[in-house]
Image (cartoon, rainbow, N blue to C red; front, side, top):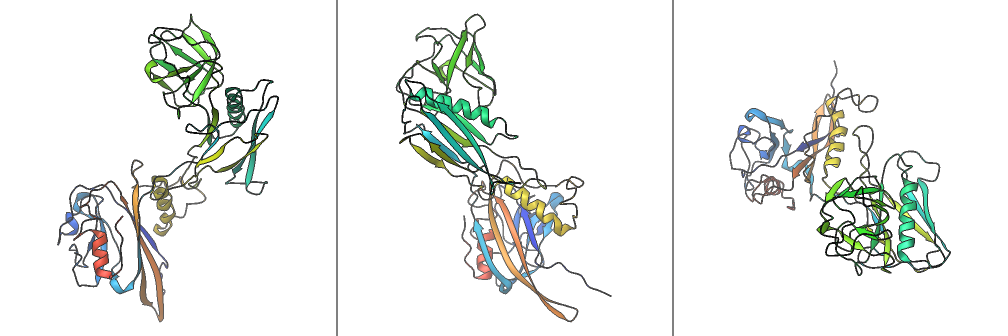
Amino acid sequence: MSTAQVMNVEYLMVGATVSSAPVANEAFSDLDEGEIGVFSVDGLRRTNSDTDTRFVLAIGGANSKPLFVSDVITAASVTGITTKAGLAATEQQDSIGFSGTAGSITLTNSNLYMVTVYVQEYLTSSSDGRKIKHFQYNSDTAATEEEVAGGLVKSAIYNFQKEAEKYIVFEMMMATGSDAAVGTSVDDVVFTQNSKVISATDIDDGTGSAAFAVGDHIRIGTGATDEVYKIVAIDGAANTATLDWPFQGTTQTIADGSLARIPAASGEACGVLMTGQPLSNVKGKEFYKKARWETRLKNFGTTTQVREANADKGDGTYDEILQKEFFLEGFKGEIYRKGEPVIHPLNSSADSSKLYDMTTIQWSDNHVVGFTGNVSPKQLTLATPNDNGANDYMREAGEGVWAVLAGLTGLTVPAV
């Protein structure tokens, strides 16, 4: 004879957006699909004033049946309850020179402007966890900011396009002091990702404003934080223009009134903006991560360099929930997580359009197995969409999960 058990277990409930508010003494069958509630052991919804110290948590499933009901938990066994508001992920962003709001490039004639980028390496590395990339520009004998910034962006794009994955987008920035309107008969301009060629109805139209000319810059928008591209060729017969480097944005069509023309040699402050991009993230094969790097300048004089934003994986993001769901498949007996994770694809309940608040309940399961007393720490995490209203199943003052847990356990459970 033998006994078996799983110690140190963690559970995860992924809730859904539900419009109705919880009601006292509802049964499991009253739960909407994806709704989470605190219930008595005989299946009635608890309130924050109940005195029974035993409870379960349940999540509604299809056909008025609970999808999952937790172990019976006693209030005294709960060792902690934490809540964390959903926080959107952010990408790293660095600027060199003009950032869209401030800054400039120090000009030196016949100077080699050198940028070294130390990129965090996540898989394998022979360089102390970093790989080193460069981009540079050798200025001419009458250096201008638009020349240097454009040269640096062009060098960066062509150097980093050798990477297997685009993890930084490079943009040229320019102050708006010389911005002018685009000819009103240019009409819609078509930009194609990774192509230098743009097209329009009448690319060199000058109605109401000077026409585009070689050496001008075109702003993708009308504000200082919108990137610019240098025009190096115009084909009036074909109604196309050629940019100095490939268009980095998504393929799109933009009306002429939503663009700006910047005459050549404008003398405006210019800079380079480096923005991290989402990295590939395959559950079971690649973990959730963000692009991170350090930027070092050489021969830039007093050029402004600013970390505009730090990379942050966020809290309660879709990717975080997916990764946690995958890991916890192990408690269901899934043995293929490492060798062949695609044999049994992950059935996720997470919604890619949602951001989730996270609530974690920790308790000790004290019981006797055979002649041995065991203390098994357990944890239940609730991932609930943060777009529910004030009276949703988590926030409602009387029967909401946070209020009921606080009332039953006597612990502080901050609402987020």
